[in-house]
Image 1 (cartoon, rainbow, N blue to C red):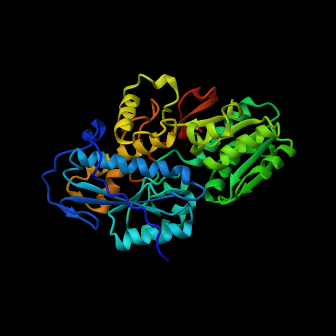
Image 2: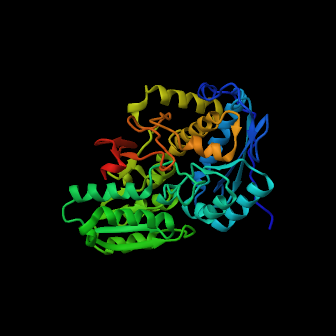
Image 3: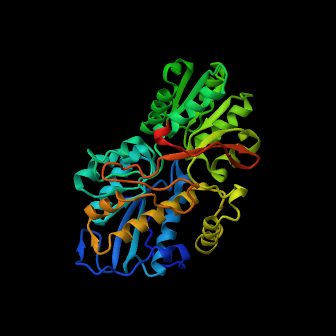
Length: 409
């Protein structure tokens, strides 16, 4: 089978202030290299759904590419340029296996970074650990990525889905009288992880779930599922779906006059990719959890990190829609990856990369919400463990309450 290959090789865009800050002079130490590294280059692999049902996330891969280009123009990382190779897997796990084998065995990448999707990462999870190739800062919040004892070469980035769902459950129990809950979730590990956390958060009140319906990532619509949920008598809607299905669900609920208390998973918070297509008038009052600033939220207009990001976008991704939260997400995780590589110095072995990734203490990544920092250890592979609830109002999100940490759930 011919691989549908989309390759980004960093090295042609303007440098940025933030990128320059991430660059350091080579450490004075003996050089140690694994595959994918030389005196002049670090080869990083990635898979992303540039096509298919999850193609709204293509913005992430494009932003990472632009970020590394800017880093390269500022001198690289400890004098080495990043060669970023991003391949399209269409959000199809079997395709992910195919392209990742190509990246590892043919392209000889140093590490896989930000591979997207729970089912896609699940398909390569054992393979990456058998090959001892870092599967680092994966773009999925499944709780399984924080298991260094069994999978020492895999680490997540965002707060885990399980904890996020626990928070929603506890919030609705405290705020919705006589809750009757309908759940829509994607029929895979991503959806089931959210459902498991939600049930745990409900505890003895789990019987308040009156209907659970699922859908496949390839389904053209979720219209029939939304009708089933309304017909169940549910007055609470827990919506576990990616951008395309999330927008469809919001719009269909409005079309049929169903007005439940609506909790939406964090992966679909983009104003540009979800809320606007769904119709702002249909999205009012939706509740979700966040750990990052949103460019549409006016409270960050004069924030220095937001202004730096906005200027970076103007220079490196002109014409991109800043209302798409995927650009902020990708910028932040690229900053963390650059910092992790920088800390490796000249010991660019895969083992040292994982060691550095597991050594962050209260590290501030630009555009995280105030009070949220990156913390890892050899026994804790969950970099971000805090969120804050927010509600959609007008044409943007409005934060409320306090930052909640995983242990508080």
